Length: 468
Image (tube, rainbow, N blue to C red; front, top):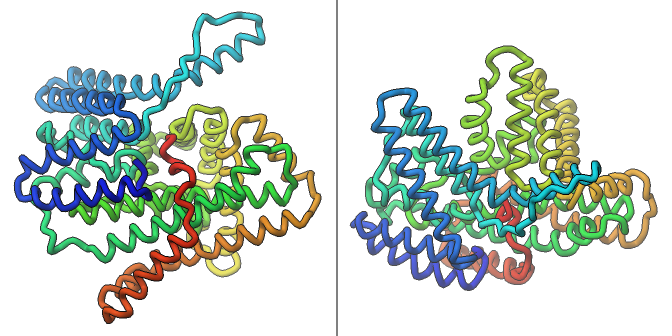
């Protein structure tokens, strides 16, 4: 069930008043919200509701068992078993066919036939997100940062539909305490909620869907048929598309949760303003970045133990982050690329942060284009397509009228994104709208809705991060 659809609008209009009606009684609200979230998830494929239920039971039982044990060896063993089960489940659905195909390709060079069959496994939407949240719950319990809550609260936490299929990744300490006391509708920040939903909807249906349909997908879908400028326009277009798409989704998710009375952590902070790669990852998909920092990089040893171990830990973390995004060698290569950038940038990151003026602009320009090069790797359908696109980008200089139209079209959709960046940076100023005279207020609301309906492409592709 996609957010910018009539089906979801009807679903939410039913769930919202019932949620507030049942809110005073947690014993009634929690089963209702779990049921609503399962209905939301089942709209994609009802079979995978059982997978979500299994993950809920599995991780809650292990969290309780870890909390009750005092022997450290037993606790560590239970933690390892719980996380192994989570990773195995994720690995089967997400990577089994990738592993089998890659194995066949490697052994075929030696003329060896491997008796493994590709199963064309369907990837359950959102499995990476709710699996990472479940791992957070178990690991935080093991560390003593969190005590297991009731099964009903944990089931609500893991299945809560605003974050279920594409994040943000919400930690137990960020959401579970909010379930302890009924939300008060008088203190819901509806102005911020509607602002987030409106800007998120604009990003997705106006900017991201247009760029995907008219600039990005045609080039990446036929990499051998396009000139240097067309490839360049597609790379820039994808940089805008993936930001507008994913930040648009999380804006809507945060806004919808806010209307239900709950606060999610921020997930984006103007990432294309970054001047070095470390800063980029502090601004881009922040809940995922911090998850890998806290549950992979630091447990590996972090920056302790000298430069060599820090390099190793960064490389492993980013390799896993790349692989998390998808079962393809392009994602692995993208993770390696990001790891190399982090290693090379790390000694100079603090100095670059202090740069101002021309040096600051130059650092931003270089970082933006390094990011775009990463997006070229990320978006390419295969390593072969990546080579073709890279070759065309630097060799096929055949300017045409089509190139000019593409670049002009891209510019028309970059400008609104720049405007949104400015609005996000001054969101508190924008939120004066509800305090304006009623005529002005409803003119602003009507104009925003009209622009979304006029320019929006509601039949566009699914959110990019659904596939991860």
